[in-house]
Image (cartoon, rainbow, N blue to C red; front, side, top):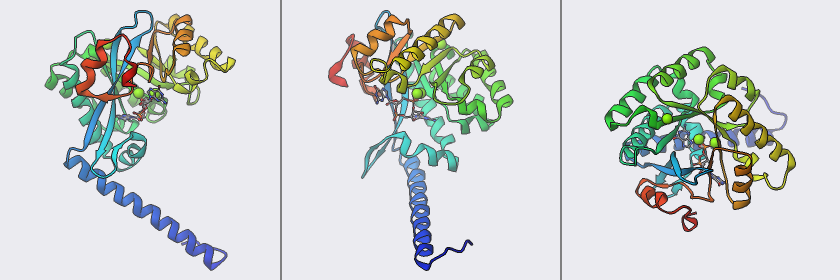
Length: 279
Ligand code: C2E
Ligand code: MG
Ligand code: MG
Ligand code: MG
């Protein structure tokens, strides 16, 4: 136990740690209970083809519908779910829900599911993806799994083997949040990704920063040369969409088209070419 200089500092430090640890314990208990009480929901955000403006996929995004706190975004509970291992159960819930929901959609529409690095450490990943597809009766080609560079950073060889197995099943593999991590280009060589998702931070500054524009141009060019679909994340206005179209970006996703919404709203999101009222 570390000694602090002054008594006051020491107490303050201890109290601070205590409060944080306690908040963490409470959240963990709350998370476990929430799983039992089925408080988690999967919402969907449309992804459109830039050239045709058609919806080609929906991304599944997890929400916690808390009885007191309302809808809670994943940033507020996924880190702890990863630390405690609860992400395994949560991830299976998302996979099963997403496959079951997608099975009710037109069969030219894919569903994209985010995978945590922790799920790649579990030996059950292939089995749970297989089970989710089979239970839902969904063709593997309609499932896209989104991973970030951090997945490849840890346990590289084992992860690559798993990715190749998933790919052999017919599942698509996307590299999410591209441009935000380290040495992104080497990852493109380590695995033949089907899709690169360009991080929202580049898209949001597209019209105002020449360097963001140059990066988008480089990544879409890279995608074209490598035969990889490029998807721009966080497209919020027409000016951004127009620039992306000009650069030949394949797909766009963002509030311009719709915020993520519950599964019951998918038909509505498929209807119009652009439903601003839903944003
Ligand atoms: P992500 O996979 O990069 O998902 C895109 C995030 O950007 C979503 O945030 C989405 O709501 C948000 N977004 C989409 N369009 C716009 C836009 O035009 N403007 C702005 N400002 N934001 C936009 P969300 O749903 O809060 O999810 C955040 C992150 O949490 C996701 O980032 C993903 O990394 C993680 N996540 C979400 N669901 C799951 C899940 O089921 N499993 C795992 N492991 N992670 C998940
Ligand atoms: Mg994603
Ligand atoms: Mg596919
Ligand atoms: Mg992303």
